[in-house]
Length: 181
Figure 1 (cartoon, one colour):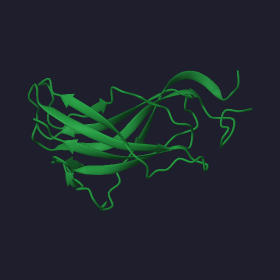
Figure 2 (figure 1 turned 180 degrees about the vertical axis):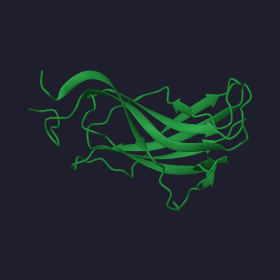
Figure 3 (figure 1 turned 135 degrees about the vertical axis):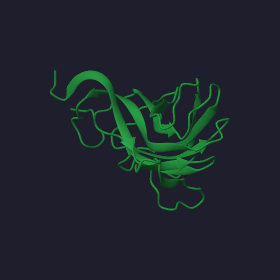
């Protein structure tokens, strides 16, 4: 077996939120959560953008799941809902004809409280539907928008990530054909 291969598994690729006064969206405040630690305090309709680069350890044709690390600002009551909507586009690199300004795809990450959620509890909400893992050096641009649903209160968000399948430590080639000998 090649030294480039190892056991199959999952990796995490996280992206911090980009805050640069993006035109056309209302950004959340970066605020003290009450303990001297800061996070983005999302209220209904606020959004931020992220950027992901696909690493060379991806499993070709594998599954990739978007997820968000977040926390409710107050305790949640059973049945309360929130939604994080992700509008994203994937583009391969190396002049392969993919555009980052094309039509986006949409995923809704919906959460319904069971009543045990406490204020500031670190939550990880993952999409139920995977996308096919892009090839190495692909770029994923996305916008994530918060909807407070029936919760009607702000939530803090820390980062957005993707869980993706791996079956190698690296690829033999640094550009297409990534997997060729």
